[in-house]
Length: 157
Image 1 (cartoon, rainbow, N blue to C red):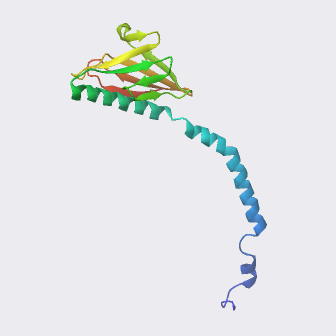
Image 2: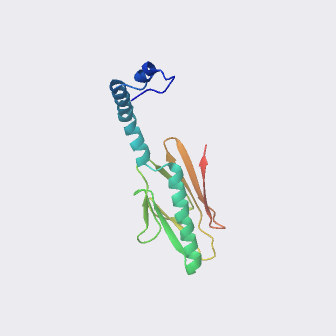
Image 3: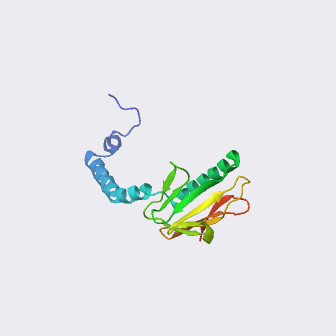
């Protein structure tokens, strides 16, 4: 093969990376990946607090809509002992182990030692409840307004 006129063949011969340099870079990348991988896996295994609060709020809104649509009260059972929220016969939401659950509600809604019921009525109202979720120093508050029955959530500082 002939070189183009004006090309520096000595510079072209030394351009690029050697196999040893490429292997060193790959070894460094593998080392960084093995150090970072456990942190990434644990981060993606547990749902972020915002996702949990959003999912619970969405299910509460569906329960309210169901009560309005069927013209029958709909009950949601919050079990602090089992760390679950039961939205129906088969729809049970279990909280991850690293999430702390706190409920503030009226005395009349407590049905057992560590269980309380949130009732959505056919007119859209509810018995009212505040649910706090804490995870890794962050807090989210889900509030169910007793008059409108609308569940909302927000992150607390």
